[in-house]
Length: 224
Image (cartoon, rainbow, N blue to C red):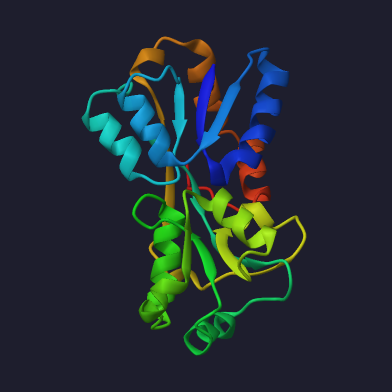
């Protein structure tokens, strides 16, 4: 079973896959990249069975293109945005310093393609920091945003909370009413509509053990 998963959800996906493989005997082949890249690949016929996106728009668009199995799109997690640094605990004041220090940079995923990047842009706009756009270092996805901050090329970066909640460094969680909720959808692709392993995994992620794994990694899970 081939699973395409947005980069922000790669770690919990590995944990979910291990648990599902142990109980089912099926094997998952996991690919992690930006949702936009997977969306383009699936439109061109890439042989994935399940697509775990970082947003709702791309699974919905695939559904409207009739590339998905009917009735299989659902929200599997609600994401949380974090501002992360290797060096010091960031805050809203940290972001405000961008306006006073034009040499300072902040990393974020490209808002045109990545929902976590759009959320980061909304946080910056909420703080009146549109004028600092020249200081935004854009990555393809939150994994690249994290890499920019981890390397020290920028002082701090916007990432997914799941990437940093159990690791090194320091993070701050912007208030959730500062950005549009990050609702992440999964869909079974039409070419896999008769694949029992894929349908089994789709059912598994709704079970209490799977939901506990998702929550452990810093996500909220929708009500069943």
